[in-house]
Image (cartoon, rainbow, N blue to C red):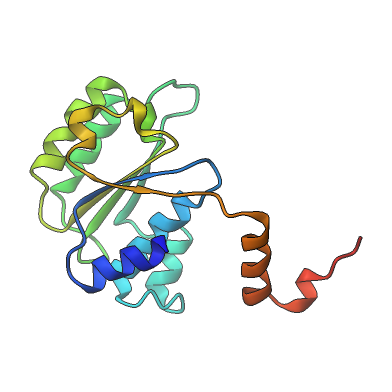
Length: 176
């Protein structure tokens, strides 16, 4: 459902420059971010062309994931400032740049305030995805300027059905 929602926005030419994707760990937020990037880059997200593979593998220089540094409690204001500086540079491979802030609830208040300016006045062809488990720690001023999309974990039955439809039967054998 969420993929269909984003596919509709992209194909309709109404994809917003900033989204807040909120859901529990394991709900597929990072995979969804890559899906969105590939859909924007490829048009149909064919999952077969070079650019779709590069995005899926994390090798596209125009799709950047930002998270807190190891040993740090928060995503620093410097990381956000570096991102903002990077938005003015021309994309290398794609017609756009995408910044995926993983663990957006860990953005310091100062980092969120820095991010606010770019969300309010986005450069052309720059997209920002904020991924978080809970938006409660995201400043109201930021939340009010992005489109919030909730994600949920799939149930065991939904996961099994998906695997049956998309995996080879030999991989699904129950060895006990």
